[in-house]
Image (cartoon, rainbow, N blue to C red; front, side):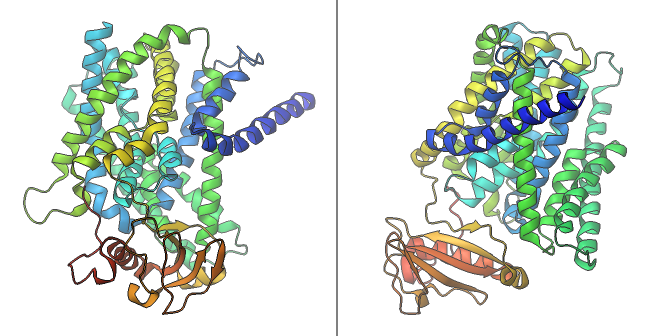
Length: 511
C-alpha cells in the first residue's frame, strides 16, 4: 500500500510541477494553458503512459468540487462597484442567453446530425455554459475595458447554475412525467433559493470574520473559502442551486473588507489554480484518444453552429432584454455593436462543458459516449481558436483599453489598514496623459501617485512631475476613492488635462 501511495505522490507531484511551469511556456507560445493540462492528461492516459481511468461518476464528483473552488475565486475577486452596472446584462446572458443557445444548438444538432430531440437539446445544454476557468485565465492577460471583462466573468460565474439543472433534467432516463411549467418552476426556485442562501452565508460569514479574533492570520483564508463551500453544501441540501450560492457568497465576502483580504484572495487564487490543473488533467485522463477522430466532424458541425449562430444570437437577445424599457439606461447594460461582437467571440468553453458531459455519461443516457467525445474535441479545437485570437479580435473591434488602470495584488500591512488597493497605469502611445503634470490629474482624496517607473528606474513623483509616454504609474487608492480615481484617470487619458472642460466624465464608452 505504501509503495502505491509513494508512486501516486511521485506522479502527482511531477504532473503538478509540469503544469505550473507550462503556464509560462503557454503564455509565450500563445496557447491557452488549460489545453496544455488536457494534453498532459492524455499523455499519461491509456494511449500514453498507460494509466487507465474510466470512472465518469468520480470525474463528475471531483469536477464539481473543482468548479466550486474556481467559481468561489471568481466571486471573491469580483468588485461589487464594477459588477453592479453589468449585473443585468450578465444575468440576462446567464439565463435568456443560455435558453437561446440551447435551442439553436439543439435545432442544428437535430437537423444536421440527425439526433433525436432530447439528445440534441442535451448537446445544446452541455455547450451553453461558458467556462469560468478559461474566461478568468484568458481575459486577465488582456487589456480590455472593465465593463466587458466583468460582464464575461460574471456570466461565467452565474450561468453554471441554470445549465447544471438543465443537463440533469435532460439526462434523466426515467422521466418524471411532469409538465414543462412544473420543471420551469423547479428551476426558478432553485436559482432564487441558491442566491438567497449564498447571500445569507456570505453576510453572516462577513460579520463573523470581521468581529472574530482568530489566533492566526492563516486561518482567515481557510475560513473564507470554507464559507463558500458551506454555501454550496447548504444550497444542495435545500435542493437549491449550490453553484449560484457559491458565487453570491464569494461576492459578498470579497466585498466585505475582510481582515487579511490579500491573503484570502491569494489563497483562493492558489486553490483555483490547483482545481483547474487537476480538473483538466483528470478530464484528459478520462478521454479515449482512439474514439476522438470519429468525433471531429460532429464537433466541427456543432461548434460552428455554436460560435457562428447560437452565441451571437444569445448575446444579441440578452443585450436587448437587459436594456430598461423606461428610465435612464445604465451604461453597464449598453455595450454597443463592438462590445456585442466581442462578447459573442469571447464566450469561451473549457472544462465546464466536459464536466457537464460526464453527467449523462454517469447516468447511462443513450448517446452519452458520443456526446462526451464530441464535446471534448469541440472544446479543444475552439478554445485554441478563440482564446488565441481574442487579443487580435479586441484590437480589430477597437475595444482594447491600454490606458486602463489594473490592480496589483500585494499583501502589505499599510494597504490593509487603509483598506486600499495598489493600481498600475501605463502611459500608452497616444494617451493624452503624456505631458500632464501630476497635480493636474486632480485625483480625489484617498488616491495618490506614489511611484513613477521611467526607463527602468523608479522615483517618487512631485506635483511638478510631467508624465511621458512609456511611464508606469503606481497609484494607491482607498476603496471609497478607487472608482472616482479610475474615472478621472480614464478621462484625462482621453481628453487631457482639460477633460472636465470638454465634459468628459471618464465613464466607459459603450462602444
